[in-house]
Length: 158
Image 1 (cartoon, rainbow, N blue to C red):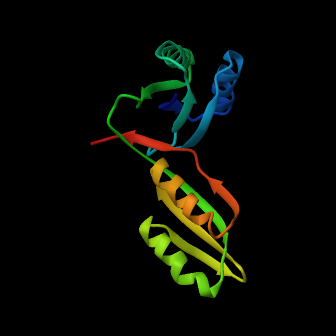
Image 2: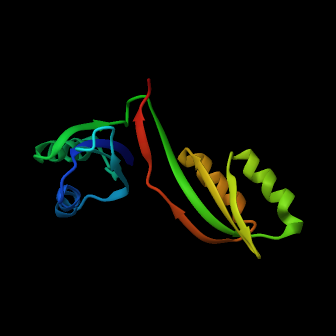
């Protein structure tokens, strides 16, 4: 099962390497990872989606993270109310005769056509994992040439 965990860390060289090493040494998988500065440039916010078959493994991951000196807090969103999003950029086959059909799909998923040139269009979309999956299935009908996606980002609900 996949779990979303946020980690506030001190913004110092090597912190990400230590966290990755912790996961690697114990054979845990990080399915996605997003890292950025917070309002405080000395603190970074990491959102990780981790594979954990059961609660014991998840608890072990959180305990090991909390032992690292550069960790400020660890939050497990698995059972907490939260908001999460992913971003994708996709290059798809594009033609003038299919423009209306493509725009209909983009409107349905609140996606945007960022740039079109020749027979290719670049699409941007932000949404929950399920929405992104549905959009990609719809875009496959046009032919996805290239896909780039961020890891999940998440925060607690207000």
